[in-house]
Length: 493
Image (cartoon, rainbow, N blue to C red; front, side, top):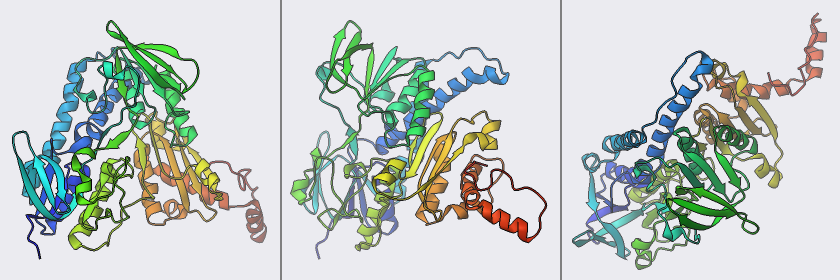
């Protein structure tokens, strides 16, 4: 049997790579974690952590601005943008030092190697650094090289300094007018954040509406909230050409075909998606199949080479941190046990957009169920019936549940305060095959936002009760009262 330098080589130190390498080492596998830049990856440095830190600060501004309606008079907040961004960067540094640093990984038994990794054959890698290079061999490899921002071919884009999530959190000066290309979750989150911090914001997106994967009613509430906060939306449009005039950029925007309008701004954020970082890997040297959208893997995270796995943004699957962690765990377990025993989650994956209010979903939308000819019933439960939401003046929102006749959850959607937390309960239920009756029968603490998840599930029982049942019981036991009007109706209680 050949002797290799490492039992497992993990290429890329983001969410998937950190998870995978830690698990491999915990089984006693000699593990190398190879990172070309810094551990933590997109999530820690340019994605989830800094964006949520910025959103948190923006929310503080919005709460101060609305405090007067609650009887608390505050002076209009003054935003020191440089200090805001310094706070964001301090937060991600804290997360890095607490969870992602090389010293921490080495304590867990992982050898952290610096360099850009390229395959030289199916069991060897070349690691190229600034001044030197070296080669290592491995028994198994897990590719977790991640992705980077996708940039569209727009005339004039290469002539300006535009922003992506890779550079957004490094800026020191607040844009006067930020133009955002894209109307998905990242675009909408940053639109609200920068608007709250004092920028004029215009969002241009090819999709017919924002948050195209969420239920229309949920996305509409977010759109209305941001519009009221001053954000301008151009949906179903794109930027055709960019030019510069003095310190301002001129954006010719409009539908794919048809007339364009001129929009002027001093900064452009391109947020139209992610693409896998394939170029440096030289996958062909290892015989690993890949395509433009990433590396295809089976349900066990194996590539076409059985000893080489892939996880996270480098694959063709969803580009989420929680997906990357799940795939990293899957790849690691299967790699060290050398058997395809574990599968990553492909169906029950939650989505959350962290605006204020949040927008979240799990499972299918109504249009998706109709397209598949699946029979379903819909329960819509308003936040105005969640007492905790009422006490916190956060009662704008709704929970939408699509269910089978037996109460199986086919899709759950929420827009409102803590919607991401609420959707987690439905995610757990769907993963474990629990019907709405199980949620309705579970005692929830009062008053909490999560009680809304149970209250929405209660409506399943409400709809089961029919007038003829009530009439039968009333007659059988000779009860004297009248049956309320709502019995047998679809009224939300």
